[in-house]
Image: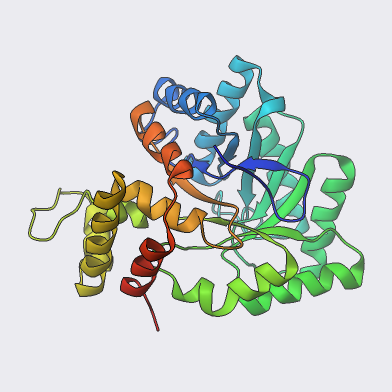
Length: 313
């Protein structure tokens, strides 16, 4: 298992981040515990959640596991704030009130006294940047949060936030969580990659397997399962570019004795400037498959083939 620094921080994190968006939704406490145990036993320590995942249930499940295993010191917990947690105006966004309310609720659900990486889940252009940053700064000074990160920020807003932090002498974003995978490359590579690398930000990609499309579970000509998720995958990825990318992944996997999921994650892991892709699992067997991607080395020819067949420009 590769261990990396999270951007400019002193946090040491595994090169794969476990996503928990299924916890409390399709995975109950027992199933989630099994996944978390397998992840830690395999060398992983970086776990990503959010207050909005199943309206707090994901954080509750993770917090129960941490309490039962008494292992808070050995895991790096990342969570997020900003998406709607209710219908009231102050139950969403990045106002000082919602950030302060949100962190206390997350700390209770996670059964911990601090959050390692607290992320703005989505940009809030209705709140002044200074107000948001000073709220985060206070949380870091209080010891309730170690570092802060951004998720779903466009490049110019991320640059503005970094500039505002410097101007106001406030805590600054140390990481970005963007949508990024072999299919969805353009937004990150066009606008965000150079900024993140120049500023030394950690990069933690979400939808790293394109909602399961890049695992090879869907194949051209096969019947689709009847689910809302499958319908979304079909609408977004079932096109000539998607099949071309998947064909390349399968070819590279066959040459390396690796699964499509492992190839897809290894491609992200080996890209310069990356900290870790986020990937979710529902069984210990899936966890092992994902963790093995951190030890898969794709040589230059394989990387070039994947780059070429997934090129966006």
